[in-house]
Image (cartoon, rainbow, N blue to C red; front, side):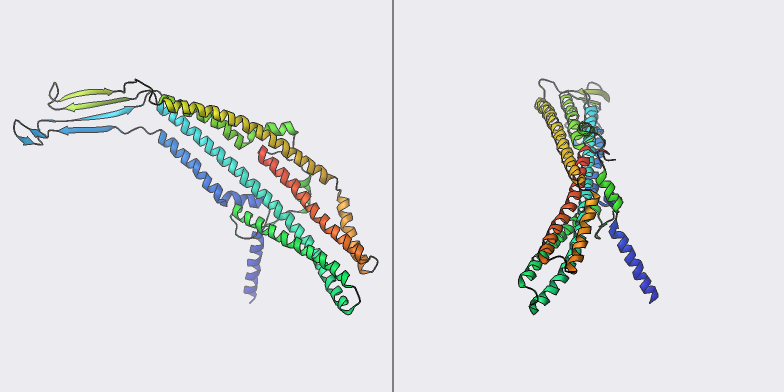
Length: 413
């Protein structure tokens, strides 16, 4: 029995350890298990395969003939007196293969940038869902604390109301606060389920994740400020944002594609050797064969024009993406700054005083020093303020995560 009990303790501790995870633990699980990330990796592998394919030349071609009917000796398939064969190889001219390989390598660079951008986006989702879950758990804990006291108080008032010792109006006043708290709890639990589901998809962990953040860590995260001003952040975003770099690389990619299409206008050579037993000028003659298309017109002219238009299109898109990125960084930085300053106005002593007053109101209400109207008014105000403070802290972190996603380099120290 002791062994079985010990086994349950071990299993319970393992399950608890699996559920309580720091953000770093979640990131490690995310990089190992995220299915979207693993699937995107194959695009890079396929780009490597395209490079390999681009380097491969056409196979040599071999053809031959034998005599079908010999009218002199009246023989069919007289291979003894008339046969021949030839071998030809297509020789690429105008740097076609070199341009094709360069274009394939550029496609791999694009695939790597797409992978990086997906990695950034999914990691941001991981961070935002992690912090959302953390603050929703705190809100739930605070709401449950209030709800526990108010439910006990409401039960007592219902008993006294049935005896006629308190008015029904007072009971209804308490009932309204309990209903509001239950609505808060229902909404919070709904959000928690959504964030837990998102974290499961992102990390590949089937158990519910319990965010593990100490009070000191939470304070440090909220106090962190970006290194550099708005112009520095814009510059860093231009240098590091994978989505913008993808658009820049797309210009180079389209130029390489245009160069490849232009080289396709150059005629290729067909070089080969031919053996002929008896139908040529000499018996058993060996001939050199060279074939080339006559370049009367450019056979790939339309594709070249299309590729040149693609260059111009990608240049305009890159200009737009740069402006869009700078605007987003400016907006995200201003949003973070406003929220930081707003939260900075609330001192830690103010939060301590809020809890101190809360505990004082409860004690004085029990002692009969505070009437029901003042008590319920304070409880309603405390309920709203508590939720708002948690939301303010969470929104500050979310705005910082948005900046991180745009700049894509370490900016908070």
